Length: 132
Image (tube, rainbow, N blue to C red; front, side, top):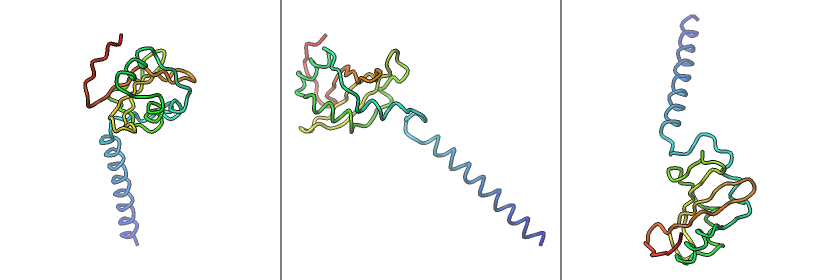
């Protein structure tokens, strides 16, 4: 009987070690997404405010407000281009494809109940915009 207890105990220890290794692997090899970012879902549906710079960039790149809203709601957050510690508003860079197949990055400040669109970037084409 003693050998059954010993074998069962060894299997339990092996199971715990395997779970720990899997947990460490999961944490180390995830993408650059922060472990906790409760704000990321909420701002996508806030009222948007376009800065003067964003409006200029949108006009120059033929991107309309509905396309910006679509990227805001469905786009993938690029954490390497975001600044979540910016004050007073964390800044998110969302990337996606517009209805006319432009690959776009929308940079948005998550400010209280408002999503402030800072700029809109066409990721594939250079545009000679004259925006300040």
